[in-house]
Image (cartoon, rainbow, N blue to C red; front, side, top):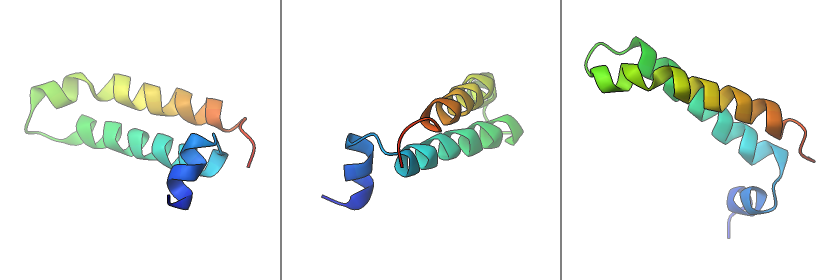
Amino acid sequence: MSNFVKGLVGFRRGPWEMVASILIALGVFMLMQPFALWLYTYSFITTLIGTVMFILVSHLPK
């Protein structure tokens, strides 16, 4: 198993912060794209979930 997967399973801060950051970036991308209305519709909730997740995982052990 890779270190990334071990970190996710072991609830370590680094991998979970990366997942939260990817969700935030995905939400911002969804907000700015002009192609699909359904992506725009779910962009705020995606960004919000990523932000809350980042705040929560910042309290996990390194």
